[in-house]
Image (cartoon, rainbow, N blue to C red):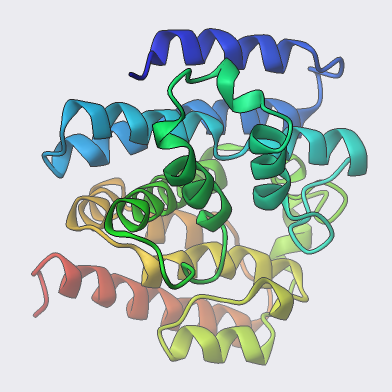
Length: 263
């Protein structure tokens, strides 16, 4: 059995041990965690899953970024190349036995482990069973949905600590050819290909090509995330501005086709 209330209490205990709660990125990740859990629950409900799988999806959402807080403590930044927070979080939970603080029943362990480890990979690993794959897809969609919200609402210096300090850094940035071509090919951006500040921003937009469920695409459309994120900045370079407009058109058409609004 899964006790979501207890899991939330235990997560709060875990978060309370961190001293620097004034850190913008720490608070961003706390808020992100609860939003992802809610997104996971919502997606699972819309998929008409069992009560057990809805609770499991919410639990995975609560735990998916548990490694991020250690990343901030150790490195003082959010950098998925330097620090694999998904693998680290999985080890925290399952090698150190922390998972038992959040759920007593071990029958869900492998599903939770696989979902957490796969939530931030470029693609989901092969060989998962049906339920592991389902929950990996749910957490990936839930996480991406909240990444859109984060990029809409949060301060730039909190989103990209040590990398982007002001809005002008993004507005004056160029978009690298490789990242642009990846979007033209309707693919997600490999994190190792990101060079400029704008590459990091477009990487988030390109998440659109890796969503799994109709409910997720409908939320992206309803929230107008693509237009809002592209319009957050006034791109100073003419070629960059043109590229961003092309990306807008590609992504909006892609979403419309996914939800049956293609023209």
